[in-house]
Image 1 (cartoon, rainbow, N blue to C red):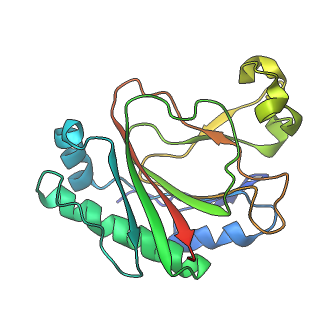
Image 2 (image 1 turned 90 degrees about the vertical axis):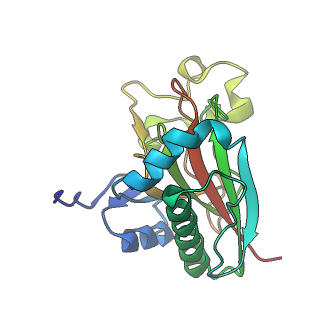
Length: 215
């Protein structure tokens, strides 16, 4: 049995080995909450075998307790395990945010989608990478927000002044579930988790992004 990963907090992130650790996202200073969990071999093996048959992924809107429809993907126990895990994550996010629907995007990525560091214009988004490298992020004290987006003047992150000397790029491990606050979360204007997509040296990369819906 693997030893549990200890809970710890950084300046902007709360990381633990229990699903309940995700509730720390509601702490004002916390911009990222992570539930670290081990990969599910059944899902990983199925994705490795069928990654080229998944197209670009899928988008669905789920009601509470609804299992996403993956019928157009190759059959197998891994597909059923993935569907059940997606159902679980959608249900968790719905309960956390008291949302009647959840928008699900299962992305099959063959090149970096958002290689620049940025903040999402959302309230709270849930991410989980099933295959490939996880989403990268930086500590609050490692960046100067004045150089985010247009403030960079079009210069790369390494040259714009965004990253302070001695900065460190962190990564969300595969299969870990993360909640990231965006700039639209109440009281979070001018803040939000600063993150980016990793490079995709061995495509595809497979991840899910889930957003709460109220309409």
